[in-house]
Length: 307
Image 1 (cartoon, rainbow, N blue to C red):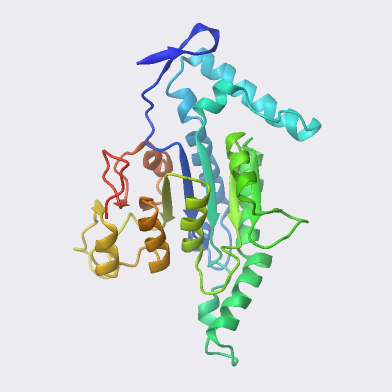
Image 2 (cartoon, rainbow, N blue to C red):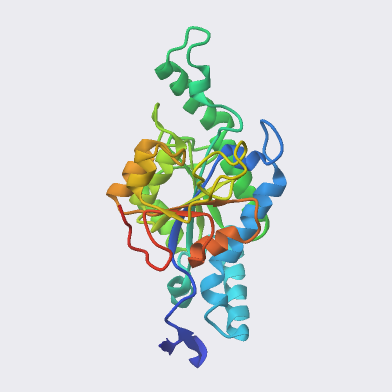
């Protein structure tokens, strides 16, 4: 089935993508790549290019090449006019209809992990975890987010960073309605500083933000191919799970996400895709619903979450 697009052209109403609004979770360790305690520019550029390809999927897969080119030019001009003159408050309706909305939560484990400091220097877990977010805000997740933002904008992807802590000099404070508005305008929104509370991981922040902005899936980008029945680094015969239910994850104590994050996803019927970030094209494949990694709380031919 098709409908009329601008210029009298046809738009396929059966898109090739599975989800329209997604939350991508990128760990600090994944951003570090092969480097220790650092950010690998090659990884951030790979993510930026993957996101760029994802946000173009709805246009390029559905429209004829000429219209796709026209839309790309309009998006490019709108982005730069908005940056220079403050115009372009809303993308043209045709682009908005076809838009793929991508939000990102970044971790900070490449620089600091609060729980690793507990028990040393007289710090209890609460103090260590509260020092963790503070340092994460200053040096880790916010730094990762700004680095990723700069990389994305260098290739023409309009991007905003929102933090759980108020840091007006470098980023916007997290405001749900503003975040959704940015997404509707075609911008990528990067959420930093976790939830802003101790004891909560950035995986929980990803599940929380996903529910708040009404995203349809959490895409958890890691440096492994998915969820295995055993540690593949120690067991060469470990089997990769194709799909899992939330109950299987919790009952088998699989190290996918922390229990709070999994429970939050289950209660809000949010599926989770765990996949390998280092393999080119995996982000686009995950959004299109192709079999990549492990799908938790759903089936590959359906978006309905299963327990």
